[in-house]
Image 1 (tube, rainbow, N blue to C red):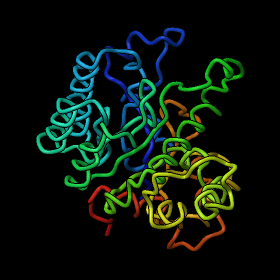
Image 2: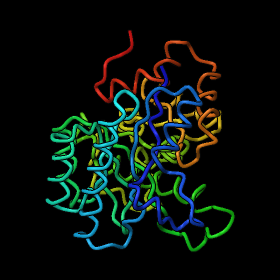
Image 3: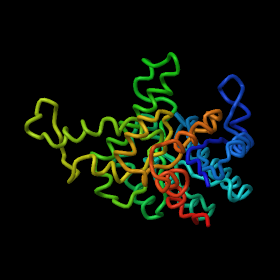
Image 4: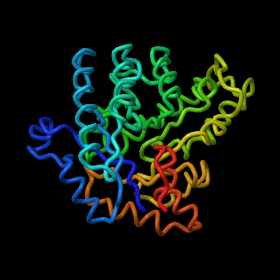
Amino acid sequence: MIVNWHAHVIPPEKAAAPPWQGRCPMTIENLLRIHEAAGVDLAVVSNTIHYLKGLPDDVSLREIQRWDEYVAQLQRDHPGRVVGFASTVPGGGDGFLKELERAVHEYGLRGVLINSSHNGAYPDEDEARGFFELVTALDIPVLVHAPAYSFGEECMRMYRLVSSVGRAADETLSLARLIVRGTWEQFPTLKLVGAHLGGGICEVIGRMNYAYELQDEAFFLGPYEPMLIQHPPGHYLKMMYMDTVSYHEPALMCALQTIGADHLVLGADAPPLWPLLPRARKLVEDLPISQHDRDGILYRNALELLKLPLPG
């Protein structure tokens, strides 16, 4: 069995009027077609809600309600092929929390996507505490995905650097902030999945560790306070999951050696990047790891996070 953790569609009215040259790859028809062609059995379908950037909260909430209703319908229409994730804004307030709870309890959605930042706010901020209380109570996975663009995008408006570099940088910063701000100290059962191998956090975790370990000795680097964690950041990184979207075996091996095969799930970012779906599968199938670990990445870890039965 093969599960693709990272696939996006948007409601049909959004797909009918996209900002990208009048075309949109993120449709359910495209998703089903490419997954069947690639031999992928199940898609975890989410919406990155990029189009919410800059909108007032009341408008954003209505757009999220519309998405939750739509993906719930997809889940009903395509049982066994589609698992739906809600979307939300962690610091948005009670209306967003109530909608997320409704989406899980009434619609049967299996998880939630949040952006690594939204309108300049990050999910470690105090306003988002209620979100983490809710998702740990619901015991659902949280997929952290980059926004369309964030800080520094004015320096990246060439050669698609916003997508290839800027989004990864925002994800790395977001996950790092969640660690040092004590999110796993407060919510140790949190099931958080970093998209795109967590940006680049596995590559910088050694630097985060010494920033924590060298207290007075590294005074010239700036303060490390208030102290909200009891262990080096790498301890908490191992409590996190990541999808395999990187398309670079050395980066994937770094993540394997950092958090372990049991905390990785196959991802393709397809749609929208639909030609990459076969490559995403082959990358994992060709890794120099045991078949048990390979099966974990290809389907078992995802099904356990989603609380779905294992095949056979």
